[in-house]
Length: 122
Image 1 (tube, rainbow, N blue to C red):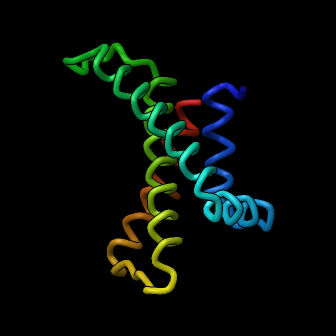
Image 2 (cartoon, one colour):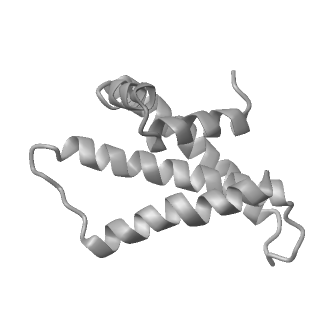
């Protein structure tokens, strides 16, 4: 079993990478209902863990460590990317299109904001 930080990094590469191995892994996962279900369960567990971290400091005072913030951001981004890929995979025939504004926001958030925050926190 991989440690959560390593698992999240692997998923970031699979669901955010453009190299052929990332694309092939992504396509293999998305074409398997069992793999999608297992990944969703694992990501949901990560979201639950992130929520527990946040609930441990209900006033959001500065008690959260940078590594906790990085984990929260990375697991949310991973779940978001997975969800977007799932929607896209299900709607290939229907040609789902994001508005230019939504695409810009998603690209900017995942490629710029989250990558900077995660790199500073790790």
